Length: 207
Picture (cartoon, rainbow, N blue to C red):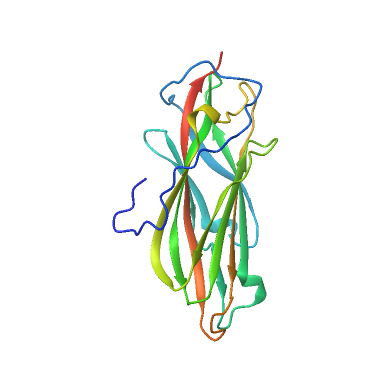
């Protein structure tokens, strides 16, 4: 997904070494018809359920998880609780039984406004309601910084982890934001707003 006018703070192709699942699909295929996605549940102190929605692209190659109020904040009138926010979203991805999918890349977008001395970190993980996939590399930003941002984590195609064929497993996504006031002026507010995680899908037919 492109975001015209956004500043790229990191555009990284990271080859993640991930374990293969035992039920292996046969071969690469285009996305099947009839794929839908819906939010099943939302937990965490960073995202009221009514502020989260999920969308699948017309090409059925991306799932966008959109947040309305997911932000961490330090300084000013912020409380210690505001410095660490997390959001866990359970998605029901309805897929024809003859197909399965994996996550081949994840895009992150949002807005960073940090005073000098502040550091912020975004951590992410996902899994198919079973053994978790190893966490994606965390991303950190240091102040001074006041820009929209966009960055990508890419998984090595040879190391994709597919949802087990023939099993009904929901997709669980977990994101966490942390801010550290550091040497910043405590009277000034810094924030990191995370507005979207976009999961790029790889499709295969089940043997």
